[in-house]
Length: 131
Image 1 (cartoon, rainbow, N blue to C red):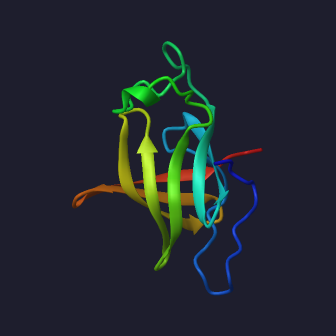
Image 2: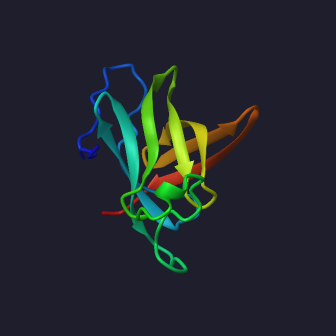
């Protein structure tokens, strides 16, 4: 499912769009968020730190997916407006787990990413990536 680099149309008074290029909180990758059908998704478009061994999704719990390349990997899927945030699922290739996640633009160049497992949640801040 290719990701288009178009901004999501958001009516006046709606939540802030989260499309664009974002630098992860650990500053080790850039994720491009854009439209994927009727939702938003995000793909890892660049790694910024060396990866030991082949740059593949080695920690995926599904053995059939462990050889897929890290660059281009869908890490955010199915994000739709939900109250004042965008809600969907995030995949962390470092640990091979998916999380219920919300995205919220809290400043023009800051994105709050909140992932949850059961009742345990963690928030991190991503910053707008330079072109």
